[in-house]
Image (cartoon, rainbow, N blue to C red; front, side):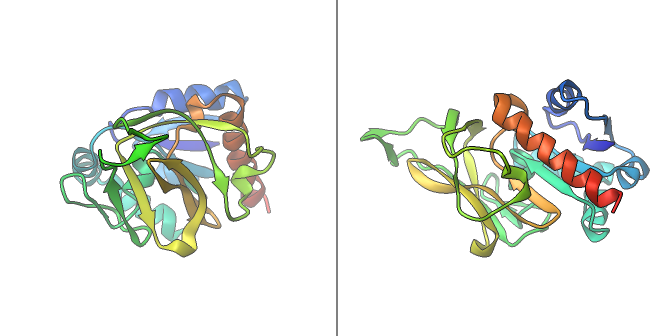
Amino acid sequence: MLAILDYKAGNQTSVLRALRSLGIGAVITADPEVLFRAEGVIFPGVGAAGQAMDQLRSSGMDRALLQVVEKGMPLLGICLGCQIMLQRSEEGDTPALGVFSGVCRRFLPEWTDGGNPIRIPHMGWNTLDIVRPCALFEGIAPEDRFYFVHSYYAEPDPSLVIARTTYGKTFVSAYGRQDLWAVQFHPEKSGKPGLRLLENFSGYCREKAHA
């Protein structure tokens, strides 16, 4: 079973629906003990970094999430979850979780895409340039497209970069290390490629739990 972290920050239900469509057992929870019994944890989110961090701290979910990391459990951060796993976000100059070294930065309106000023937020479908092998992306083709909705992007330590995407500038769209990953796009809204990524994550969690 996978646990989806509930901290009142958006798209937990759509993640649950996507997992259930794959026949993957999952539960939305704000109970640390349920998190710790799971095979892996998904940390989704939409909205503002400051509000999300306030909710995590007031509920104690920040400590629970850091314990998940300390225990070496597989963890997947999605969208806002991807951003606030870093040390700080430029959105409201928010101190974040600090799971990884790095900063979340804002798209700038003077950047251009195809000669035209970019629209912020970056909203719609885009491809990934996968620069480092990762279990999450097994069976995913270079032309596969994923769904993005974001005004800020992760800038982690370069050694953590797994995939990049271009929109006005080239930014990091997936990063992490073994057992601990973050993606800027929404796999639960990305059709077959996104479902394949969630299936890959679940398979990895299941194999590790039963190794």
